[in-house]
Length: 352
Image (tube, rainbow, N blue to C red; front, side, top):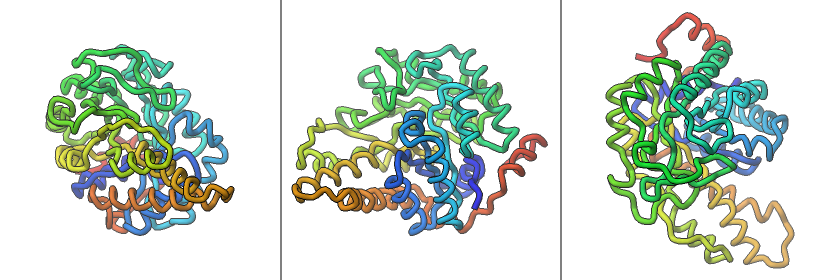
């Protein structure tokens, strides 16, 4: 089965009132876990790779892994998404390696650390939309800077994330600016800043309205009902995984992620794509620590990784079911990227 564009999956999610977890993958094990969970739950799939993940796994190998996933699970609509592309060139290179969706994150300059101007963001995002849509590839943009309302900063993850301390205004997306940005760029999806951040250390306490601004999502969705909103930094950082790591030689300080009930609430407010990375990392590394601790004489790499695949698969199943995407794959009818390109060129609406 050919890869599916992000726009098609998120249109179906919007029309049917569910959300889509978007899982960051780095290697065969994370991809296997996601795809097995999708097959068991009959869910569409969004997998995404950061620039550093592409460098780690090698674009050519990664492209074959993604194509293999599409061939192994032909009944599952699969979108492969470039996460936090730092320039149009990065997004173009992702497309050249088979990605069916790209994120042009112009909220930061090309260094991935410095907040950019609004004008710069519009320029690089509109440029990316033009060449991506010509190939039927979807584009996600971002307005506002991802970071914690508690600390004013954002955690660097894979070399991406703002440096320094920002004020609350910079860390929350302005609804009117979001409207202007979508009109100026034509993006298919929009990542918004609401107080979430990358990594495990998101909040020092369970987040409430002062730390997680769901009211911003609600306001933006009212202004942009047909633009798909994206929540970045949405891992829950489960307490049991923190405990698993710490009981087997780790040292994770107590921390809180985004509670699942808050994510479900945001889906009802218009969020369609929910990015998850840290939870999978914790599940895989915690399982590896546990295996090695229990089997100190073992050097069986497969034995070390299999429990992590199982644990990640269970976590993915939970997200598919919780967000309402379970059971939706068999209900989707997708079209090739070439047909998507013609629809973009003809200015056709994609859903009601």
